[in-house]
Every structure is written in structure tokens, then in C-alpha cells.
Length: 228
Image (cartoon, rainbow, N blue to C red; front, top):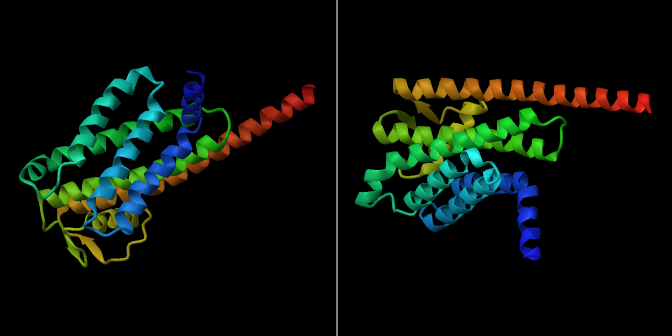
């Protein structure tokens, strides 16, 4: 029991770096490097990603039940092949559930960051994770848009390769805009504007928040030193 409690404590204390690692694996390793037909890697890394998110919120009783429900449902749906009849039928629901799941995680991390009184490693890991997760949400939204309208995007991309629209999402939120993939429909263009603006606003706000907390913590530290 003691050994188990040590492992449990270690997992929770390092929940932010583990989540960042799992998110990076899900987004970059799966989307850009492995063979596009190697779906097993995607399913395994997605399952690890879900577990890392559960580890993040498991001490928060208010949302853990909802998160467990979303997690189990997401894992079940992602293991169904997209090309199967059942996979095609459930595809939009899978994307919506994943988007909701990630949105709740982002909200939870933001609350932790706001409540934190000082700039520490967990805050930095959390800030980076939110930005990557935001790009992941944008990618899921673009995949959903393309599923409902296969003329929503044009350019040099493979419709059967999910990584192309995920790549477009990260290019959009960072406002790089290479022009190889272009939003054509009104919904796709609205999404591109929303995610590009939100990506830049997030960077501006989060930098101001971190600097403010750092200055505030430094001031309190100097005051304590003077009082001593």
C-alpha cells in the first residue's frame, strides 16, 4: 500500500509534465511522423492522453465523474475504425466529445493557473499544454467542418490524412499562413478567423498574467525579507 501511495503521489505531483508529454505525443508524433495507415499508434497514444488528463483532474470531485464518462466514451469511439460503417456514423459524435473533453481540461488548467500565487514549473507546463491543446481543438473542429462539407477547404492536402488539417490548425493559430491549405466555405473561414485571433489573444493575455504573478511574488518576497 505504501508503494502504491508513493506512485500515486508521484503521478499527481507530476501531473502537468505528464500531461504535456502525453499531449505532445498525441499531436506531434501521431500527426506528423508515423505512417498514416498506422492507426494503432494513434489509438494507443490517444488512450495515454486521456489517462494523463484523468490524472490531472482526479482530485477535483466536481468534474471527475463527467471527465470519466467522456474519457471512457472517447476511448471507445477512437478504437472504432473510421472507415467502417459504424465509424462513419459515429465520427461527428467522436469529434464533439473530444472537443468537449479538451475544453474542460483547458478550463481546469486555466483555473489552476489563475489560482496559483507564484510562477512555478507546473504553471509553465500548463501554459504550454493549453496552447497545444487549443491547436488540437482547432484541428478537431476543422475535421468536423470537412466531414460536413468536403469542399470547405482547398489546396495541397490529402482528405484521407487527418494530419493535414491538424497542420493547418497550428499554422492558423500561430498566424503563419503558408497558403498551401485555404479555407473556402463561410464556416471554415469563420473558424480560421476565430482560431487565429484567439491564439494571439491567448499569448498576449498569458504573458501578461505570468509577468504580473512573477512581479507580485517578487514584491511579496522582498517585503518579507525587509520585515525580517
